[in-house]
Length: 255
Image 1 (cartoon, helix red, strand yellow):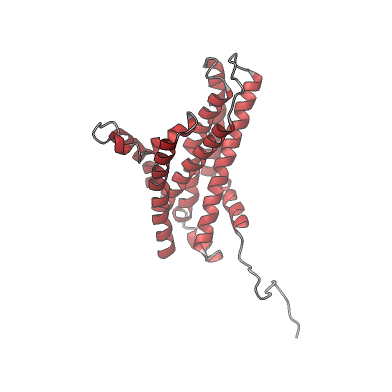
Image 2: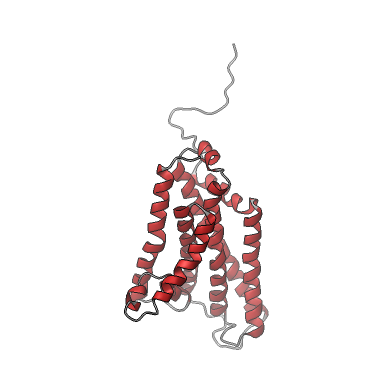
């Protein structure tokens, strides 16, 4: 009788797919679907359009690299979180969760890979914004003295803004596990809470919980109070819904 060895089953060897491999799989999922592909293409096109419009119609101050990068990074941060939402919710909307979790029974590994893939996309989008901004200034430089002035701290803040926007999208997708309510509430809730901030009696409190607390990241070097407000807003908009969603995914039966 002959024996066929089909896998390496040495004791102590972890044959489970690692985070890097799972993350690559999740990144591929972003472009494998028609909606994901066209949405990513729309993000790139919008960033390019913003750069062109600023260079054509902006004044000298608008056309310095810090201002162009701020505007372009914010443009990318508006739509890339929607890709993150779809990456999470597609498993349930297309009923592929059962297959995914059958292949990789450790659900938290899959969710970690999805989060890492979303953050990778956010950083790639920021890198594209940086390249487009630098090319725009190089091709049509502004007459301002600070055309190429870009403090490293501001670059870090712009990148952090992109990452936090993606985290909010991933958190909403995880909490609702359905594309429509996650996308609607991702855009709608911040608007509603921002409107409440116009009420003078509670405006001070709203500054600590609305997503507008993240805005200083794209405007100037952030102060201590701004960091504190961003921390509380991040806890509310990312940690809380993400914790609720991961608890649901861990406990609920997948169909």
